[in-house]
Image (cartoon, rainbow, N blue to C red; front, side):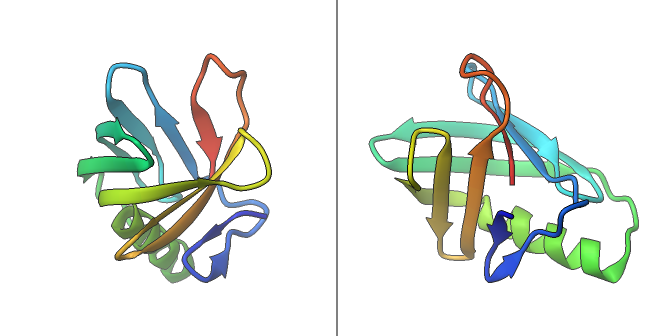
Length: 111
């Protein structure tokens, strides 16, 4: 399974990140939905600012969500992981491993 920071994402956790071609990023962080902007420059991906809903969740899910949203802010280094459908985003707040789960014309990834 994929990971956020040093923690693997458990098999029932629903974490989704979608990058639209118009510079919008949105998704489900496990407890709350989020939205923001993205810009690609070489191997750097700049995200943010991000906004999110404020629903309550379990401590485990909320902790995972907090780590994910923190890791997705700022300029992140992108590296492919074994093919074009798997990428690692790394920045000052941590790393996120993404895998494309939709057709190539839709840039949606499960974390």
